[in-house]
Amino acid sequence: MIKRKEEEKKLQTAQVSDLCRRRLLNYADSFCELAKSYEQEFGPECQSREILLMERRLWENRQVIRGYLNEMAKIMTEAACEVLVFQPMEGKKKRLLTQAMAEEGIRVENPCYLPRANEQQAIVLTMSTMKGAKVSAEETTDMISVLLDRRLQLSTASPYMVESMPQSFVLEEEAGFLALTGFAKAVKENETVSGDNYSVIEAEKGRVTMMLSDGTGSGEEAGRDSERVLDLMEKMLEAGFGTDAAINMVNTALFARGEDKNHPTLDICDIDLYQGSCQLRKVGGAAAFLKREDEVEMLSAGSLPLGIFQQVEIQPVNISLQDGDFLIMVSDGVVDAFEGDDYEDAMRKAVAGIHCSNPTEMAERLLRLALCASGGKVSDDMTIGVVGIWKT
Image (cartoon, rainbow, N blue to C red):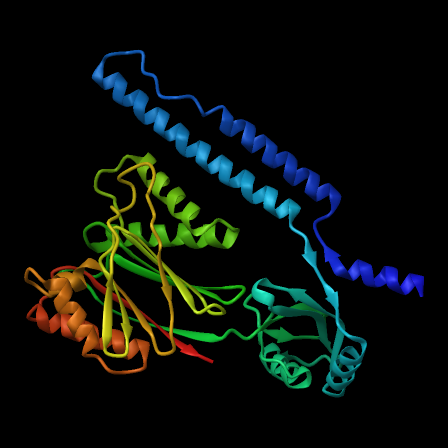
């Protein structure tokens, strides 16, 4: 009996090994010490303008490195100290699950609950097929949902197939909201490549992030700049950086290069599908729009594009979402197509007049309206991203 209780305790917590934890914390301390070596204030000793500017640039680059080192130390410390607390599944449910899935030719081992935020619970388990066949992990998740009478969905990090080799799967509670995205774009006249780029990230724990970047100017170079911004943002967010920290690191990387003509914009829409909430961050981008039935709210923030200053002052716009809401992000070329002193209001009215429930169709209709407003001329790249929200 005592031995059984000890085995259950082993299932209740999981973290990196002591050796790995010590190494990570030592690395974090090293990065912190390196960061401290860059902390000195800017105090030029020479009055020569040319040397003064050079020293200022060198000092600014050192501050960029200091920020990177501190962020890396923070992530390593969090990884070293992270503890996952597991709760063993009740004996009756465990037997029901293992026996029923065995009849379907699927072996289930060590099913446990993994507490999440907001009183949610994921299920962690190991699965494999008994006869060497492959079974869709989503179909298996549907079967488990029925057996346990819970609305579960396969996590984005889990394998897509259940195979003969045992693999770990995480089944999350189905979120209260569903998000679908759609895009439409037009390339500037006499150009073959758009300077705008967009990206959608589906992360763990019911989060969807849509990003739109408008490169400076148009053509291949602008396209490469905006694509580089999104690639860096994706890598940093997936590595565990916070959204604001990732934006500032991308900004300082561009700032350190000292390029006067390379200042892409960045719009980020971060949606929590469990809470039905959204945070919109804008770094120099055109106004965004929230469409709720026939009402349209224009969302804007007075921030300059990336790479102009060493730090970006980010003021997230917090939005409480409702069933049937649409959030629309656009590049400058779309808003500029509605010429006149009140061009943003003209676009708001155009959005209000669109009645459809498909995000891609809404983006395409809005693009056609922008082209009509500009007389069919594409004076700048046009890109429209739409995300629709529905209750499940």
